[in-house]
Image 1: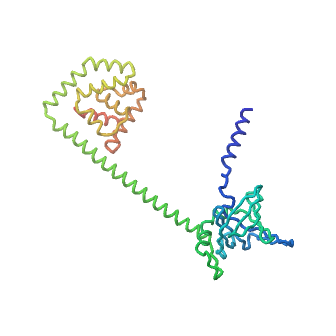
Image 2: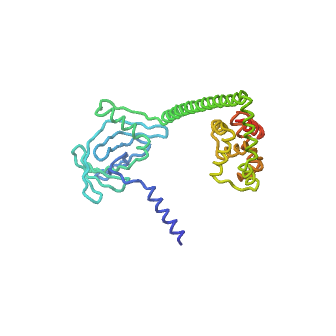
Image 3: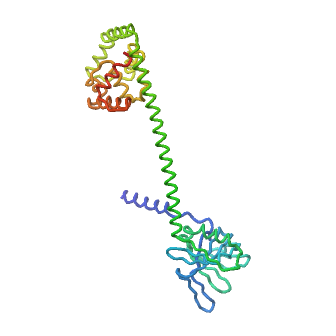
Length: 339
């Protein structure tokens, strides 16, 4: 029962949201004349394929009129001259006094799509033409405005659906070209940015290699002594024990590991950070590699598969060096840094 109520409520909400907003003005939009009823009983109709009078109301204060012939491929506007000031006075219950250039005429609203205007005993029935207004309203208004009060000759203006389609195709083509140019510029910008980043990285790698090669023998021996002392220290043995037993490391413990690495290899962490914007997993993996922790133990302490740790190492090598490489090649590179 509740489901039915929810469905009914959703349908009502959908209907309310899809309904058109009430019009601000009664006559706003386009209207076509469908028939004229004469006092003596005669009726004149205006089929779609024939020329029909068309009125376009600007609110309830201005009326534009022309003749209209419509086919599947084009629209012909005839005699686009009439332009009148109007005033609409409500009498209640759908009855109005319609003043066209101060000439009063009774107007009756049959429904939202039909109005009847009486003039000289004749009844003019007009039907709303929203589709026509949406499709051609802007062009028709422009034609009537350009030919206002020019009644010297009967003029015809052909609005071609084919030409409009071609124009739309041209617009789409132009927009597509602009989008392609923007995309190419974006690709070029990304390529230049990546090239600059690659050159900067190559320079950093070259500096690391030169620093390692030009390091005095005395400094190398000092680093080797620090490594030996650290790898037999209580801190390192405690870390090895925790990792071997599969214990998870807390954030503050990772900070401690980073500090231990900095003591033994002062320039390692800063060099590592400048190579590539690493994720936490990548950075922690590199720290443990530098501390000679086996890949199986790295996987255990980081709660990852060994294959995942291997992928991380090989992916880092490709990102930094721009070519494929194995996990061991990345390990060798990490071990050479700051050593």
